Length: 162
Length: 162
Image (cartoon, rainbow over all chains, first blue to last red; front, top):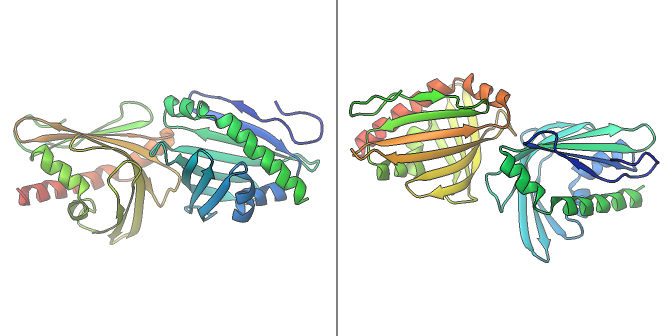
């Protein structure tokens, strides 16, 4: 559920089908600025890693481009990578997502930005997995905590750069 | 259907589920040699491209390793890439498959080699797609002809290196 009062909302994580995860979150910033925070490497580096050092090895935000991030956390070094399938400025990014620890287990993430008309933006991300096991593996990986930490860092970035 | 008489068989392509393609083919060579033809870059370069020039930019045959092939055909240049999820020598390779022309549309291919005990080897490849549309796109892409050409070239290579 997202809150109805003005402000950023809480994160809703649901499972529309047995191979999908849907993440719904409202950010207290106009769509242009949320889009920039999602697509400019120097901004992504400030929130994606949840406070951990994030090395953006590659981030070619265009159809067919690749991305690869390496997060340096106290628990170790984790690489993530994928490829952009669709980039529609300010509206939608479709990209694959793969963690080095589970190579070959690839999710396809569709992120959609909705201008709420009151200075806020709703970001909905639907991830499709090849199998239910892959989907459940993601859900049980500590994803929810990590996501909340990332989105809290993104809230902070959007607040600071207002 | 594969032929029952000794020799390489015809290629069977079936759709076990609405997101899968299953390819079944018998090769007239022992499993060790089929495994080599599938995993040694200098051999793959001789059959995968169906007679076209194939540039193997990357082929790290191990869990987590990446591969990238570029085929130079009279119709144009086509890149393909993916990542190895599992490599069990002589038995199984699990890897992702993505064509540059459809970035983000990733299949997970599981190739299993079965020693038929008579000097022949059965190669079964099951590809799982994220959606039925992706699967059907692959089926209608001229995949069957391309596959038959590749496997004919592999037959020839296995015959020559006997």
